[in-house]
Length: 125
Image (tube, rainbow, N blue to C red):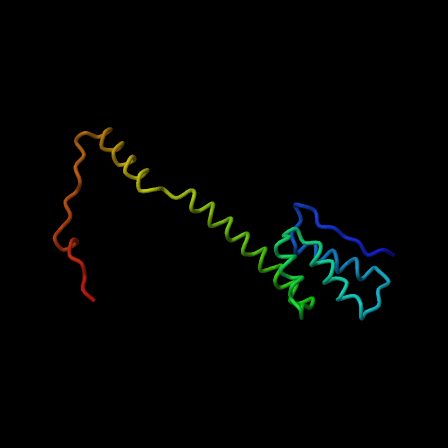
C-alpha cells in the first residue's frame, strides 16, 4: 500500500495530520517507521512552505516537535487574522470626529455637557 497524502488548500494542518495517522494505521508500515513517515509527510505536506523549510532545518526534529510547531503556526495565523479584522473594524479618530460633527450639525442646539470640577481632577497615585 502506498503511503501518500496531500493537504487540500482548505484543510487545516490538524486535519491533515489526523489523515496521516489514519493512513499510517491502515498501511503496512512497521511500527518503528510509522512516526518517522508521519513526520516526514507532515513536514513536506503542510501548505506553509516557510514553516516546512524551518522544520527541515531542525536537526533533532521528531514527530511531536513537528506537530507542535505546525499547530502553533496555524494558531498564530488565525490570531493574526482575528486581530487584523478587529483592527480594521475599529473607528479611527478621524471617523469619530466626523460622527461628532454630524451629530452637532443635526442638532444645532446641542452643547457639550459641562464636566464637574470633581470629574476633571486626575487622581494622584
